[in-house]
Image (cartoon, rainbow, N blue to C red; front, side, top):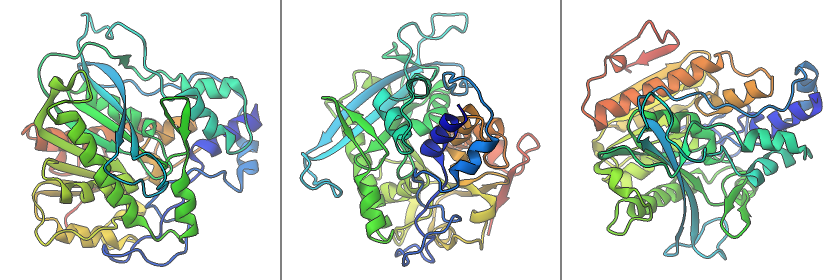
Length: 417
């Protein structure tokens, strides 16, 4: 079992291999990759995985457990398959348009007494998606695959939505990572009253299941590696276009989602991890419908317009060792100076690059150590500050949590360069 635990963890979330930290926000620098770089999270097998295995305890292949959401609503879950045939896919030009999978988490009506909405529980990933994660290190143990694929996500498939209209938040994952690696954040935001659209960007994850029994794998990972990791702006620009298309299909006159009437089209935000967070600026710059954005530990690749993002607010939330002002990632300093609306710059002591995703939950599940910040704190901090930011800027609810240090979150440091 040690071998299987080690293999699963390294295949899922081995380390952060990133695009080089840009010295400016205008262009990608030339090509060396170091363990400290954080722009893109990919999922290769770690070269020292054998050493990790010796310290991992034996444990049964239990079902992964996503932390329970904290809000008052039950959570529903719907999956959409969308294809934008007006664009050529940049990674696979011969594909029939740009193909996207979207998971919507949303506030669901509860039957009472705090019980979850009735119906079929939503799973974490498809079996094939989980299998591909494990295949990277030649592990095909069915129990490990099932334990990830059938994780409890605290959401119910196509549950009846709660009454009313709710703000929409788009989530974009790190490069090489699937949309389900932001599930802990997505279900929590939904439980607090948001409709959350998590995107899988075609050919940019280890595996994305699409209808017809097909699976899209990370062709883009090979392209980026062959190019010396210099095409970060292609990734963010493509994701900005993906986001515009998804917003069109969710909020347009003939929505692709059966519960689209639950969305308040006048209140839209976007958040992302790693390059998904960098893409939030790119998407906001090209789409005025997005009212507020969050970058969780991603290096910026695009130059802001002359007026920044207008008066729209933005949150920088990152690792303290890498993303403090004047730190290794100069793109944060450059972008901060160009933001013209209300802005917040927070770093989290003890967090590592993957700590803003489900990585800590997955590492704990497989019994392996990770960053210095305990899993429950990593999850709690990410949820608390992302929700506070959107509550203040999409709901006009004043959030003292954003005003300065809070004793309940001693890891979080505020910066006002």
